[in-house]
Image (tube, rainbow over all chains, first blue to last red; front, side, top):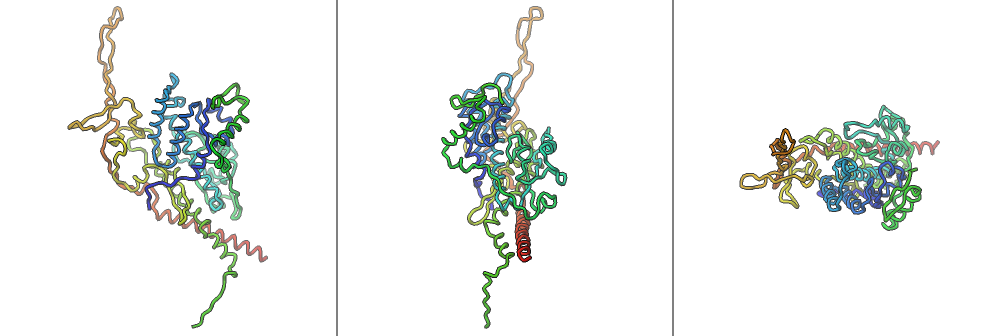
Length: 266
Length: 220
């Protein structure tokens, strides 16, 4: 039976709900200096200091997650917002990833954030004890072909991954998943514009590949969002800022609510 | 009539108890839900790889996005699977679409329009058909003008037409579009049911084997 309205992806919505708007002039490389646990609680985009844009983009990602709109519509609306805000790309950089109004950049913001929420949602559902017992492992697979594919097998191998049956398979709670991620998180996407994803591997297959035996129980993991979800947005915002300053305060500080870079990064 | 009444409630073997636990809704529902999600994801990713945009151009990966938006929820009376991707239901069941806000639907006519909104182009003009009816949106035509210069002084003395650009139709305008149902974009329910059956069977068998092992160890 098919129903007209999609159901809310509750676990994915959780991961959006804990995120606070974080305007910052940090570029991508500098953002990587921030601990994944803090990045996971912030809605930001490299070099974007405008709160209104970030809030609007965040709202649109929530709509995409709900399955009630499409990316092109939301991208067009963000372009209109940028027009109203008087945004102009740096001369010579029009259409590039540093141009906030370009299709590539807007798609990247919408896709990455949406896929992060969905990736978390799927990961969280997969951490239910019954599911973890039935499907204790997962495989890294290519789901979208790339013109210039990244060398994922090398990244897997460099991160200490094994190749049981010639495939990139590991137990779900193996640290390999965090190690291969550019974002330091155990769920996909594992990089920007990545065509890779994960696929559950059931216990029978995992046993055949000698990854696990019949009776080993894997303890579920958590990203500890519960406390944050119970706090008010103001408390979450203050906690995030405090934690960020604890971490990057040697080279950055908040100026009128914007995390700004000062001096050499660690 | 001879009636025999045997109370077996306290005599249930560990294996029966294990089966009982394994088939309780709180134990079974996540297995059913995840199994269905896995089958849908696998199928939708496959459809995405097999079906590029009809017009060519950069891909939107509609079906891969649908795969990533697939999840399940446990409801009081069972498990519900949801594919959170706008447009997926329309593809499965088909039907007529009419514009909700605008007067016309904009149907991409060229690869460069695929996956984009008409408002993302700043040089579109309306093309009118017979009876003055709007039929399409096209790029505005431009005449390319060259300068005519004096050979001796190099001063501009006039202009020459060097060609024209634009005019391509990017979107067709339609009052409505009727699409055929395409149930093949989602997995057949028989396959989903078969996979759920297999996964539930594994789940129950494992519970039984574990209980037998535990019972055997307890007896030894």
